[in-house]
Length: 67
Image (tube, rainbow, N blue to C red; front, side, top):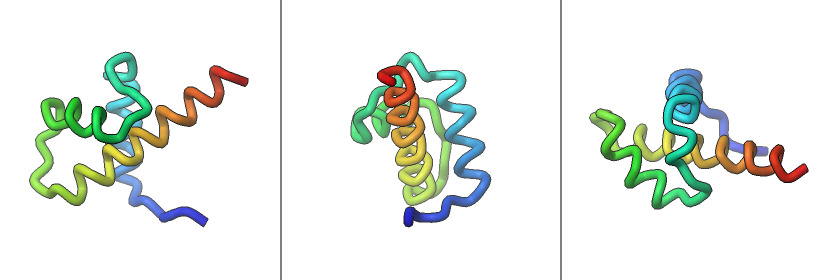
């Protein structure tokens, strides 16, 4: 089983993928660098959790495209 994410992290990540999906990649490190410019999050932990979920969503989209 995976970790449970709060709703606000899911909503933030979904909005980011919707707006900036063409700039994002499947790599967590690159997405973190991209989102440093986009996001104004006071907590590094919250930022990292959002970036992790963004990366997960990008990987899901990639799997859908390939199938």
